[in-house]
Image (cartoon, rainbow, N blue to C red; front, side, top):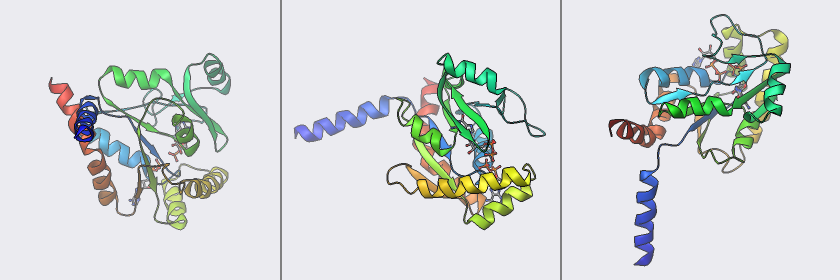
Length: 213
Ligand SMILES: Nc1nc2c(ncn2[C@@H]2O[C@H](COP(=O)(O)OP(=O)(O)O)[C@@H](O)[C@H]2O)c(=O)[nH]1
Ligand SMILES: Nc1ncnc2c1ncn2[C@@H]1O[C@H](COP(=O)(O)OP(=O)(O)O)[C@@H](O)[C@H]1O
């Protein structure tokens, strides 16, 4: 009896809490940005992107402050030393990191904060109290991943090789039980997107309801 009441109270408390942030991780080229862009377009006011800092060069079409905060290693290290980052990591020869300000900017808009971070970031975010939903987006195979990365035409041969090496490590580490709440195999894009939306349905509902009130 008491058990049932307690369960009911916990369920109500959980429902009253705001929507949880969302972490999208997975190998470079798996399709995280593609899925994220669709989500941000379809649910413009519901989700907000956590704009990371990076020391890598901007790609054609990328906008500073929208896709990333493009900074030098010195600038980024200074901010890290000042305690302004929630997490940071070295990936494929560059630094990447989530600043406290990036997450706060989204939460200040009452939006669900979506983070696109690598697996080191996932492990470090687990040590914080952010409590997001962890989703790994994975390619159907390494060969398909390589083809997608080549076709994207953003990488040099060297950075492509670094990304493929990192992809092997990512796919191995992702097998750790409980690390991710969901693994999406991005074979057919529309199917992968449906799976993502379905998983986030409850949070979307919560966010839409809290915006109404
Ligand atoms: N830990 C961490 N990883 C990040 C962050 N921002 C981006 N990344 C990851 O860095 C990797 C490389 O990103 P990017 O250079 O944009 O290449 P892309 O993912 O192939 O488009 C990806 O795995 C991202 O998820 C961050 O703030 N923290
Ligand atoms: N399901 C899919 N089928 C075919 N190509 C895809 C699919 N999903 C993404 N792509 C393409 O693969 C490339 C890598 O996707 P992207 O979203 O940039 O990956 P990530 O952000 O994980 O590095 C892009 O050129 C994108 O258009």
